[in-house]
Length: 191
Image (tube, rainbow, N blue to C red; front, side, top):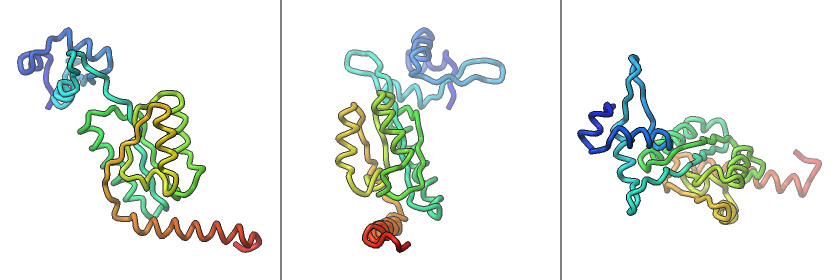
């Protein structure tokens, strides 16, 4: 529900001056009516009130990157479900999503552009968290190494613990890709 500044003041005891400060700190998004009047989402106000620290200061919501991955294009609907699920999760937690990465690649592929982008953002300090549906979305193998890398740059990996209905099929596809890669190394002339 959208509220006027006066409604926010009456309902929550938050002054117009405080609302303006939150806007300038990019803690509170502003919505404008067609006539140029400010409005605030009730959910945003309540999220900020929950984020108030013991000292009375408001902490800025963490900058979050959402990472969703599927193995093949035939799972495109599952990718969209993942992204929507991650968006809702972040919204409920009050996270500020600064990047959404959607990848179509095997979990064993080490040359994923989206994952590389997350790594670079972590190095530059541009994100605080990476939110994934499950560890398998991030990588099939070496998740511990990735987690240590991100943590060494101050970035937390947050796993929702959700389950993907296509996870078994994707795992089978990844196993086929592993066998194919090993076969190629053993018999380089065969494809």
